[in-house]
Image 1 (cartoon, rainbow, N blue to C red):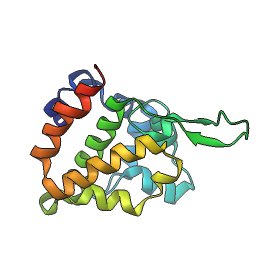
Image 2 (image 1 turned 120 degrees about the vertical axis):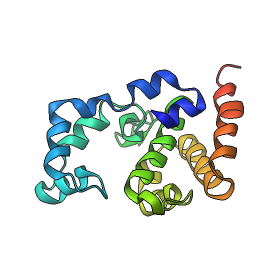
Image 3 (image 1 turned 180 degrees about the vertical axis):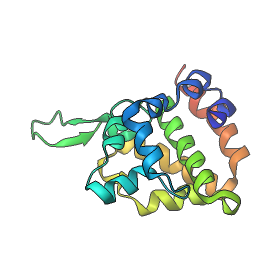
Image 4 (image 1 turned 90 degrees about the horizontal axis):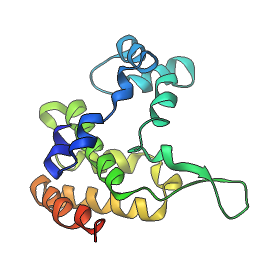
Length: 162
């Protein structure tokens, strides 16, 4: 919420991740909580899948997985659809918030980029969505929060209303 408010996404900040209070997600958070990583990963290791994640990604538009659908090219393959900019920004901010929680006092502005680089997100993400997310992650790592947040407020979020 705090990060969304800093760039002017007030509604998204208030509504961010409300599905975590559903029984499906909340019980997994309680049962698998460790404090240093997502409880969903622990559930996945235990069961081979995560009921909480499957529930969560289908209800929260700031996750690129929400935007995976069948390709329009007739191939029948799943592919990433282009995300609205405000959700790409929220996804970026979510990565910062999670990194701050999991790293605590050792957090640096490089942590969200390093976490992203370890994952496979780029393979299913729409190219334009990926390009914006990566631009913001690199900017954060190189120029810091204040510069990146100012850029988001003045350039990224303002462009959508032009």
